[in-house]
Length: 113
Image (cartoon, rainbow, N blue to C red; front, side, top):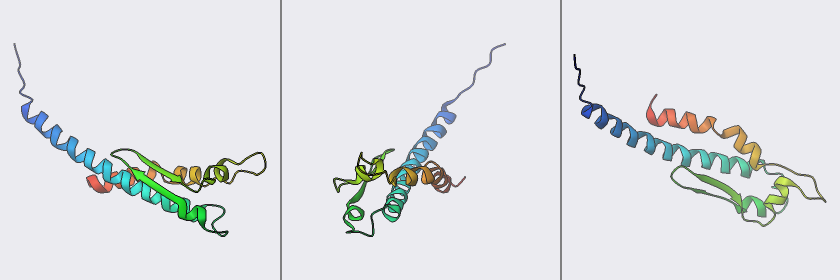
């Protein structure tokens, strides 16, 4: 006995869903990076001083990548500390609170699952 299955329709359907998932992932990444950047701005330790570091928080978003960073020149020292001052982490806590939970929630919304 021989059985032959035509998977042409299945393959077409998978390609359609592949594109939908890729698009949803891009939108979810954008949304998540913006949420993280806003939280970094709100929780960073020296925002009550000059405001320079708050204004220097920026982000970039690629297809499935995102970066949140400070261009102040000293944002990294605030995050990790130096031998003269203690660390005041604000990037890592914002990332830990929001990724991957916000990304997954956004994916569910975009995919309507």
